[in-house]
Length: 129
Image (cartoon, rainbow, N blue to C red; front, top):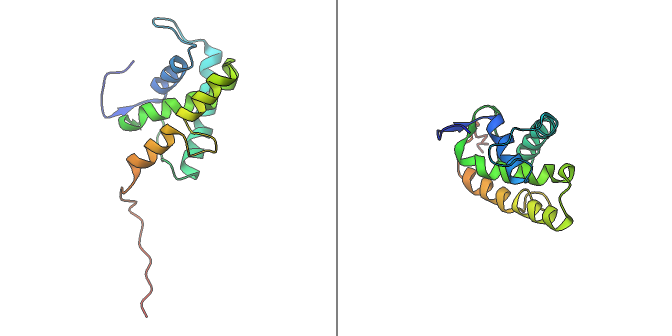
């Protein structure tokens, strides 16, 4: 795991996601198939978060550290079905992550709160009468 800093990368998030799913034990090497699956879901999940205006991560290798825990919860909920979790655990992971319906989970609400009120640097359109 990388040292604490301002940004984390995609491989850190994949490792944390696998750990949250219970697939990766301490000191155990990652299975390449598991890593490939989570990596394939990573882009789609980030695009979903951006489309729902929950959070926007422009560079997957520069994930802001304050987003990291919430993104790991969301990724765990989105990837849970592949790893054979029980229906109760799936519901718990989804509730902790993106939520059902999407955007109502604990991590999604936390990301919305973190990004609320930040400047967008977009031009404000006005009409003068």
